[in-house]
Amino acid sequence: MLKYKPKKENYPLKDVDTPNLFKDFFPYSEPPKIFFDGKYIPPQPAEKFYITDTTFRDGQQARVPYTPEQIETLYKFLSKLSGPKGIIRKTEFFLYTAKDKEALERCLALGYKYPEITGWIRAKKEDLKLVKEAGLKETGILTSCSDYHIFLKLKKNRKQAMEDYLAIVKEALSLGIRPRCHFEDVTRADIYGFVIPFAIELMKLREESGIDIKIRLCDTLGVGVPYPEACLPISVPKLIRAFIEEAGVPEELLEWHGHNDFYRAVINASVAWLYGCTYVNTSLLGIGERTGNTPLEAMVFEYISLRGTSDGMDTTVITDITNYYKNILHEKIPTRQPFVGEEFNATKAGIHIDGIIKNEEIYNSFDTWKLLKRPIQIIITDKSGTAGIAYWINTHFGLEGDKRIDKRHPGVAKIYKKILEEYEKGRITPISNEEMLNYTKKYIPELFISELDHLRDFVINLMTKYIEDLAQDPDVRSLDPAKIRKVLKKFLEDHPYVQFIYVVDAEGKPIIGLTNDFQYAKKFAEFFGKETFEDREWFIRPMKTGKTYTSKFYTSKITSNLCITISTPIRDKYEEITGILGMDIKFEDVVKMENGSYEI
Image (cartoon, rainbow, N blue to C red):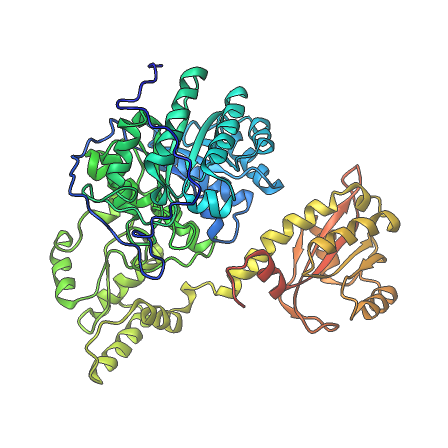
């Protein structure tokens, strides 16, 4: 490791009695201002460019939290997209909840080299224990550096904040953990009064310990600008060069983390690379707080443009990720969002469509089929004909081989007729994708799985895991009502959308039934106590097949809720079926509680 030596004079901490909030830049009553000092600095690109990911940290703060299984799937996508050279170098995880830890264990078990899994913690010693227990080599540490945070949020002065931050960094180093200090709100911070002095102290600790200390420059409110002539603290070029030239931070220890509040996330990240910052931090689809983070897929293409090579990154995985978000996570992706939106490479103007038919390179900047598995799309007009309509349907739904719709399909002819009628009435605008979807739903309905079917599949997948795990509980397998009661009561508390849960023996005779719905408890008890269930489908099917059974939708006779019943075998130590565990699930409630992105 090279001996630490700042390239210019040392910068002592400037402790102040009152916070410097840069009110000229950030008047609050108006949008932030951009000031220029007229001092131009030329680009000095980093020797290597890498992308890092915060999908499972910052990205999770802006949406319904991912399940451990979903995180594992997305992590696999990231690894495949990254390629053999590990261009997507790292990804960070929360470490606090049982779900966080399960997701971490699942991904670590895959054994992927890239992206390397790192942690994220608050600047607290107890949080470092979580990193050590997880066996991670690197963790981010929140080290807020603007006076907005130091004075107004932490209620400290600069000296106290720096001492606390250095203490936690020293503790990390003592545990052999590589710290990554997140300089939160750096674009509203006193650069030479706090930021550079803090960075210098970190570099001293790096030299003493022999362990790299990384610095993430966080443009927390997206107020940074890409202009080299702009003033600090908002000029991204001057910020990067200040860390390298004034604080002596090697470029390979610098990382840029931007937000998109003012539409500058991508250009600021690119400029960070061009002025010497090795890493840019991103999230999938740009999902993050407020307007989001720098989109990972954008920086993949920016990397290729700036370096002249993909370096082995598999860009087609971007479309796999997009489809996973749309179809499995039900994320609403803006239709015009570059690379991932439904219409990002769609052409509407009739004259443009004519050009595409002649040669798609006229209106397509790159081979979207080769690089993204996304054929160029057209927007339908009266000039499209049945061939154009069939093309739209096939590309929109990804139909191939025998599944492709022919232009002679009767549904296509009906759609074409309706479109011509629109233009005969005087319409001059193209038919939107939404309108085409509605026409296709009406005239070729077999292509669609309804939203209700998607929701039902979601509920079935979720509740199947729950009930099968519950059926293996030793107390449930005992068929002892007293032991079962405690387990089922806890399950009902954790899953209030289950309106009734019950166990019957191998002859269909009731053992125990419970509900937390006090309004209907008496009715449930009367119903369950006087019935036997050997003729019920939820009993017969699991007994016959040994598999979990799920009913169709029905309306509960007791509560009038829209319900699904799910049941599964209970087995003894010899794997013989000794009973059936069943539950009636309030469909709307489980969807709202377990997946808040849905509206029923």
